[in-house]
Structures are given as C-alpha cells and as structure tokens.
Image 1 (cartoon, rainbow, N blue to C red):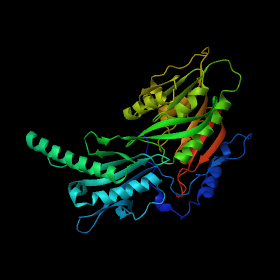
Image 2: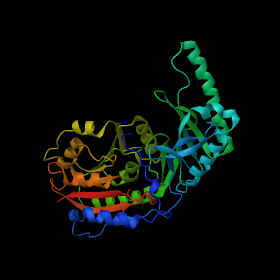
Image 3: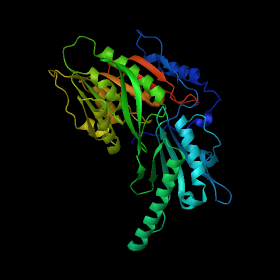
Image 4: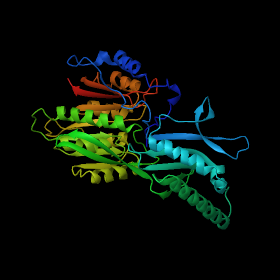
Length: 403
C-alpha cells in the first residue's frame, strides 16, 4: 500500500488520552481561514475508547542478554524497548501478544525464536478473529538448489508447528503469516479478519462487512472508522439531495479495501469507481463489494496519478458530474493528482480524508493547483481522533465544493 503506517506515536501517552482538545485547537487555528461562513465550527469526533482502541499494531523484538528469550518491543531513540503492556491494544491484540510471548519462548520453537525480527497483530472490534504476522530473517545464504530446498522444507515445518501452537494457545487466532525479504508471504490458516460496522445510509441503517488483510492498510481504530463512515454518509446525502436530474458518479482514489466505496456507492445513481495501487487491496475491495451486495461499483488497479493522467478532460456539454473522495498517504496528494481533481470540471465536490493535517493545508494553499486557487470553498471540516493517546495525530475530513 502507498499509505504510510500510523503506528508511531504511542510514546506520547498521557495515561488517559486527554489530547483531543489540544488537537482540535490546532485544527481551528490552522483551518478557520478557509471555512465557509455558513458553518463556523469544526465538527469533532473523539474516540469512543481511550484505551483498547487499536485493532492493528506492529512491534519489534527485544532479546534477552543470552538471546534465549524474546519480548515484544517498540522503537525509542533508535533502540528496541521491551513492552510490558500495551493498553492501547484491542482485546484481540492483547490476547494474541500474550500467546506469542508464551509460545515463541518455548524450547520447541527455538528456530523461529532465533529468526523473528518483528510481529504484527490484526484483529476486529469484537476480538473473535486475530491474525499474527511474523517477519523472520532468511534461513541460509545462497546454497546449492538441493540443500536450499531441504532447508526451506525444514524451516516450513518449524513454522507450521509454531503457527499450530499459536492457534491452539488462543482459539481466536485464525491465522499466522510469515514474511521474509524478497519472498512471498507464507500463510498458515487465513491472512485476514472480517470487520463489521453499522452505517446510516440512503436505504436505512445497514451492517456492512469488510475483509482486512494482514500486511495491508486498514484503519487501526475501527470505532472511529465507523464514526467516519456515518459522517461520510451524511456528506453524501447532502451532495446528492440537490434535485439535479443528472446522474452523479462517485470516484474514490487511494481506495484501499474499498470501505468508503462500499458505504457511499448506494447514494450515487451514476455508479462508483475506486482506484487502488495495491493488488492485494484491489482483490479485497472486490470481495467487499460482493460481501455487501454493492453492484454499482468497480475498482481498477492503478496509481492515482497514473489514472488521473489517463482521463480525458470533460466537455462542457457532458451530462455526468462526479463527487471524488481522496484518501492519500501522509504526504498528501502528488502535484499531478491535485492538479487533476481541482481543474476537472467533472468534479462538483471533493471529499479529502487527510491523515496529516499539514499536508491537507498545503494542498489547500498551493498557489497554482490548490483548492483556494481553483475556486473551491471548504464547506465542512471534521476532526476524528483515531489515536487518543497521541499528542499530534488527528485525521481530518474536508468537504470542498466549487464556489
């Protein structure tokens, strides 16, 4: 996935997740100049849980002095710091972390213990499914083909035994995935969990399901993801309730596993198109469309900037209009994509999901391609606290409409 990881600021913990007011103040100070006078406040959505909110977490490894035991660790000052507890972790993460510590340090799993370099945990909100991703070093240097195959088979048997022991220790662990440099992932069990959320859509409240694959991007705070989905439903309701007879189309760039498209496609009579660079996420999105009976959406496997470059400029007599949602990585929109979405006459509105507030501010202010320069107004701005124990990270959703 092109998206950067968001697992970097737990060392900011204040013991209770009391940073939201400061983060909202930062948003107001930096974005009020662009607000439409019709709405004077930033809409705020704190995390429903101050603890136990992370359904996805990544750890390094700290080794004992003799190297015979390993513990989960976070990076601090360039060094691995052993983690005694992880209160931000959801119940499934906490349980699986305990199972890993117990199983990997058994004498029967010395081979895996020696090679493990990092561990990821992925769960869902209810905690009934957990996938553990284990990054290991390679077993041998390049050898003759016969010896290498024998080593690989022995290593695979050792990992199979480790994975089986993990799933026996905790029955909610449904899969264990091994990752090695320049090798395809090796999966024991399944490599995904299924998350559910309830949204209020144009056809009433409905429960939607999403397949989240280990090693690919998914939102680390599913409670706030649900709040975001319902906010976006409200936005879509406003944007499609103007009485315009033209069929409005929905386009999502940086679509990930298609969660926004699944939620919003029912609002758009003109159908929905999602664009995602990661083939694994494209496959997950197609499955998520099918899971949720979304029949008016398609997805293409492409980088956002490549897709934008291939689009023709709309004609003045085109009947179709579109709403575009962008959910880029921390760096924000690249110049080519920003230029395309702010210059195209096809887009009546742009929904910008920003995991970095300053990148959004830069894209608003860009003197040549930015939203202000191209005549857009910031009609709504919402702040979502995905990481209540972080001093800095706040996700924003801006809704831009042509003035």
